[in-house]
Picture 1 (cartoon, each protein chain N blue to C red):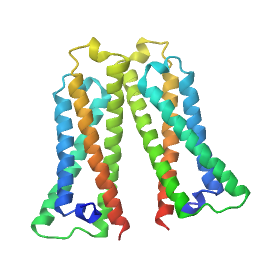
Picture 2: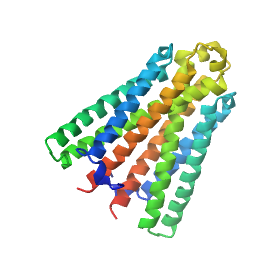
Picture 3: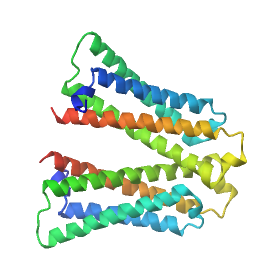
Length: 155
Length: 155
């Protein structure tokens, strides 16, 4: 269960992790985009862009996992895994930066400048949920980045 | 020059990197704390806390480097390096999160809600400089986290 090999690309574990990343990133985009006025804030736009990149990358790898499971092909070669390592680290870093900056702005809105109380039309609840979903997506993405790195180190 | 061994703990390269981290983190704290009203913003307080942790950790390791250089002791053992890896990764992650959230708030102030233009008493220039210094400190910290990891992997 806790072995790295269970979660490598082209397995059910790897597919589950990719689907989770796509689901959380997509949910974060959906919730954020449904909050009126998000486009006035750079950090929230950047969150959507970064979650878009995350979901595209994870969706691509999920498709590759499905293909590998269907034709029973082994994706465990050094070139592919090093490609996955680079992509996963880059997307995880961008997701983390986006989640942190949007989170910083949310804390400012709620606690420091009290925008949420002063402007009740601002959908703070939605923004918060979107940031929380982005952090979940980042957590899964960071996990798979670490797993890919361990797989690469094992070559 | 570009070999990992040049930058390992207990060498002049390692000491230079630690001194750089302490200098940038200390400068970031100083510039931020000299900006009136920073304490009203959670993200800026968190930046100071995180840079404080970063400078304490790096200062401790700098002292250890000086000691190792003075008595010509080799710090290259697996237990010490794994301790350094954990500490460096944790501080680098916290510094990155703090820099990103403070950066997100700065972008909001300058471009979205125009606080810098509306409230000229807000020392935006200082806040920006502090965030930039925090990013520089993070960059050095991330570099040494990666170097420590490579050293650990070589055991």
